[in-house]
Image (tube, rainbow, N blue to C red; front, side):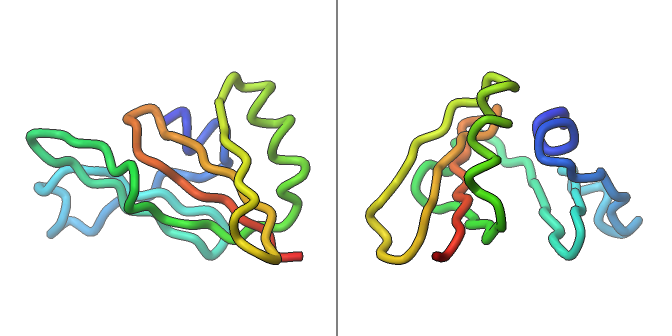
Length: 99
């Protein structure tokens, strides 16, 4: 949880009672809600991934460096500056900012 809360500024929120038995965790940041589930056997999502449209991607890079979070720059999408980050479980996350 430190990854989403401490590095990206999300807040853990309580799942509705009817869904709590399914496991996983929910996070909220501004208007973004992320649901993280648990699957057995676990296999990280390396290709399928959520993309977060952000402002200030330039400042995210040094922030990730400060927290020892590796990222990959990607220039393949015309008109966008974007990076890929793996969460602690190996799931790929995309952060992009349109020019």
